[in-house]
View (cartoon, rainbow, N blue to C red):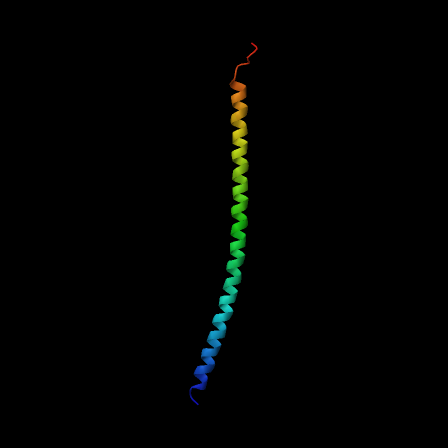
Length: 70
């Protein structure tokens, strides 16, 4: 039975491979969720900056206009 140690080592190797794949999948899932949250937050902040700059352009345009009554 000289093949028994080879079969045992191969089985242990496969178990280790499955364990590492499951663990890597969990880490990648957590990374994907975190990256999605960061992207959403960044887009929200960029939208707020765009809205503020548009409001400032409107305010400056209103200040530059000469009053129609005078």
